[in-house]
View (cartoon, rainbow, N blue to C red):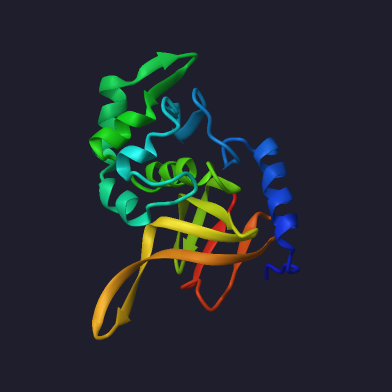
Length: 204
């Protein structure tokens, strides 16, 4: 059984900063122009415009337009891979595609959405793009999501997988935003169990 000790917010931030140094493909503390984000084997997005999120929604830095990001990107990996093949530039053994192209086409799944969240959030608050893993029941797979600090407190954001709730007799999708309580040595993120919907997120 995985155990953890509740951590202070500053400890969680320091752990994530250290993880970003040791595992730069898995934990990204800041995205700058020219940075590469690992998509799949040999495939990378280049951050060609750090303000590209404003094409999704014109919002102040630090504001994350969850609904706009969720609605923009269509979950079709085949089209995304085809775009890498057709338009990607080969360099140093990597196939590189400008991230703004994914925004223009509205193509992408969890990674593309999480990059948009990171770019929007990092202008005014501590935030991290996680290229990690997700477990739900019998499912386990690679998955991108974010940890964003608001008023100094960390929350896990999964824009790809909102929660369906029933309110006033209607079913509504709401963003998955859950407080982070700690991270253990295996990189498992402990969330407030009141909100986590049985999901387990891991850094690597």
